[in-house]
Structures are given as structure tokens and as C-alpha cells.
Length: 168
Image 1 (cartoon, rainbow, N blue to C red):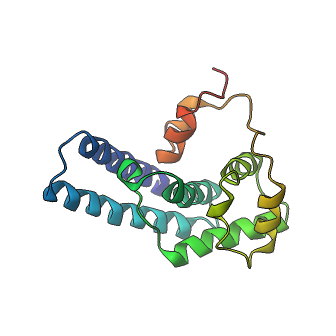
Image 2 (tube, rainbow, N blue to C red):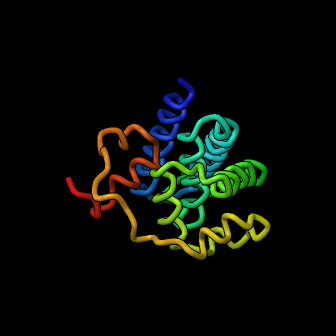
């Protein structure tokens, strides 16, 4: 139920960002975008709080962290994330790498994100993650994804559905 609510919030925030992008920039538009940034920061925080017991929340939280650094904020609605929330997610990822408990989907997603190695450079103390990024094989995406299911996974799902590398 909580993930469904967060998905709805993400979809709503993303629709605002898209609307703002196609309008003339004004002070009011800047204020609305700033409000979206604040709201998205809260969405990420919620994912981080759920992430220990919910791998979907972990995947979405990691995606938001990666996307915040790789996509312009005026297109994503994500400006910055809470540092403690970010560390919580990175710590969980590092732990799962060390315990060999990354599920297959998170494994290929993390391989892909590692293409942008600068995203993870600020976490040198997480040795398992550091080693994973150094050995990453970003071209190891699955042949296809379940697009209808992805569409219900917030901005992360929209991103994966936007790539044309998956078979229909």
C-alpha cells in the first residue's frame, strides 16, 4: 500500500515537471519546481526507510539517487536527496553485495548504474560497492522486461520503459 502511494506521488510530481518544462519560465514556475524538489526528497526518504525490508523500495531509492546525479533536475524533478537516506540505501546495497543477496533485477540495474562510476565515488568506505562498480558489466541487461509492471514502478519504471534495448 505504501509503495502504491509513493508511486502515485511520483507520477503526480513527474506530471508537474513535464508541464513546467513546456511553459515559459517565471518566478512562479521556479517556485513550483522547488516544491517538486522538496517533495521528491521526501519520496526518496520514504523509500530509504522501507528499503531494509522491501527490495522494491531499495531499487527505487537507488534509482532516485542515481537519477539525481545523471539527469537534469528540471527534467526529473529530483534535485538532491537527504544524505542520511542516501547512506542508508548505499549501506544496504553494500551489505547485499557482500552477502551475495542482490536479486537478479537489482544486480543488472546496479551494473547499469555503474556505467556512471562518478555516482558512487563519494562512497569509498563501502568496499563491496566499490569493488562491484570496478568490476561492473553494464551491458548485461535482460533481453526483455515486463513493461506493464514497470509502468507501475514510479519514475524508475518509466525510465526503464523508455530504453529501446529490451525486446517487446
